[in-house]
Every structure is written in structure tokens, then in C-alpha cells.
Length: 387
Ligand code: PHB
Image (tube, rainbow, N blue to C red; front, side, top):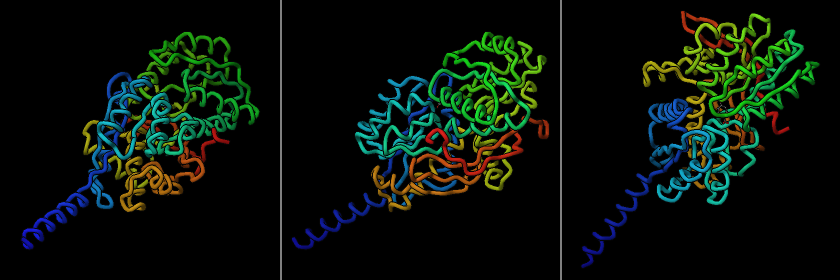
């Protein structure tokens, strides 16, 4: 009898150890995997999975499982439902992804209610991190990537600008930061307009800009097809021939669309936190590994947001010894620093937002391939949208 008891006890003990050793840690990502931003959802997932391939799926004794749910793009009700599914059915420990601002806004209250860490890996409206104390961001904010191009314009002979930006959070942020920085440096705005988020026709907006004849048009459009359409319309309306420059944040010509824009992109000046042409050993390794894992694809800022998002979760779990509670993870991410493929980055302990270099780039052909070649930078910039 005693032997039987001992055996049973040993089995229970072993089972308990077994469970502890293999305890899953589920990360649930809400991303646009279909619809107009689907390519970007896939790029973010690619970045996250590449990180796991390189670093293994076990951290601090826990096995990482990634679950992806499609929110189809700008569709806050779908994002919220998918996050609820992740939390209730899949019982995820950490929420991640979040390509689009409305998606992050819709899910923030759920992170607060359930005290779950929410790692925003792309959505870039400044105020997102203030929507919940459980949010941390590994991508960028629009004010952060916009201020440098506004300063660059003012310092490079551009005196008057017309602003065109997408009519939702990141576009509003881009426009207001551009106006703030550019006018503070002595520049003058001749007008601004906001474009629909779905399939905008840029021609009338660019015609208006042409009629006002500013030195430059500043443009923010969310990454993807809109960038291709906007640059095409800028050329077709003859703004370049009229001597009106085009300046933008790097959302407009990221690596996934730059080939579709083609030579029309040559000479375009943008500011951004990531280019696949960034010259550092970390980025060379990243680009090489990415193109090997996903032949025919180039990593873009969504890929890096996902890659760094996983890095942040892994580092935080190492610090907490595998404790994935929202409180523990949020404490652990504050002040984290690492060398990203984009350059040095850090999580601001006050805002849980990312501090990083923002680069000024010019589109050039490098070995026959269109690239955003960095030629200037603003170092370690905090989100100016929070000032
Ligand atoms: C956003 O919705 O926050 C967003 C999407 C695409 C971008 C930038 C920001 O390129």
C-alpha cells in the first residue's frame, strides 16, 4: 500500500514538474491578415516568427506559442472581438501585433480590464500608449518620425508647404507635428487637407496643392498601396515639373512597395526609423536572415516592429523569470535597451513608448535596386507628441 502511495505521489510530482517545465506561454496577435493591409500583417508576423526561429521557443522555462487573429484592417469592432476571443477562448498571456491605430484603441480597455500586457508593434498614433498602463510600443509614433522631416525641410530651402494626410489618428498626428515643427523653424503652411482612409483618389488634392504652388507637399499615408497611388498622382499632375517637391514620412515608400513605385521614387526624401539599407552589422544580419527565411521578400518597418516586439517580450520574460502577468511585464519593459536592426532603441520608462534614431533618407538605386539610403539622423528621439 505504502509502495502504491509512494508511486502515486511520485507520478503526481513528476506530472507537476512536467507541466511546469513545458508550461505554454501564449502570445495572441491581432493583425490585418486580409484586406488592404494584409501584406503588412504578414510582414509583421514574418518578423516575429524569424525572431523565434533564431532564439528558440523557450524563454525562462516557458514555451512560447504564437496565435494570430485577423482583424481585416481599419475595423475596430473586429479587432475587439478577436482580442476577446484570444483572451477568453485561447487564454493568451500577452496581447501583441496591432497594425492599425483603431485596432489598438479598441483593444486597450480589454488590456486594462484583464491586466494583460499589450505590445503594440506598429500602430503609431502618439496617444495609444496612454490608453492603458499595460501598453508598450516597439514601432514608432507619427510625431517622432515627422518632426525630423519638418526640420530638414526648413533647413533645406523649403519655405512654404501644403500638407496632405490620411484622415485618422496617425495622419492627424503627422499633420499637427509637421505644422508645429516647420512653423517654429520659420516655415509657412499654405494649407492642409485630410484624405479618406479607404481608396483615396489623390488627384484632386494634389491639383489643389499645385494651384497654391508651395515649395513642397508634405504627405502622410498609411503604408501600402496608397503610397504607390500618391506618388503616381504627384507625377501625373506634374507637380515635380512645376518645381513642387514631395516630402513624406517613410510610410509612403517602404520596402514592400518601393519596387511598385519604380523610378518615380528616385530622389524622394523621407524621414523614418527603418530602412532595409540601414548600414549596421545587426541590420545586415537581419536582412540576410529575413530574405533567406522568406525568399523574394524585403523586410520593412512592420517586420522590424514584430521582430523587436518579440525581443521585448523575451527580454521581459527573462527578467521576470517567466512571470507573464501584466504588472510584472510592464515593470520589466521600462527602461529596456537593445540594439535593433534599425539602430539603438530604448523603452521610455515614463511613457512605455520607444526612443530611437530617426533617419533622413533619399531614394537611390543601389546595385540596381531602389533603396531608402540614410544620409542624416536625429539621435535617440522621444515621442514629441507627448510633450
Ligand atoms: C496606424 O494605423 O497607426 C498606421 C498604419 C500604417 C502606417 C502608420 C501608422 O504606415
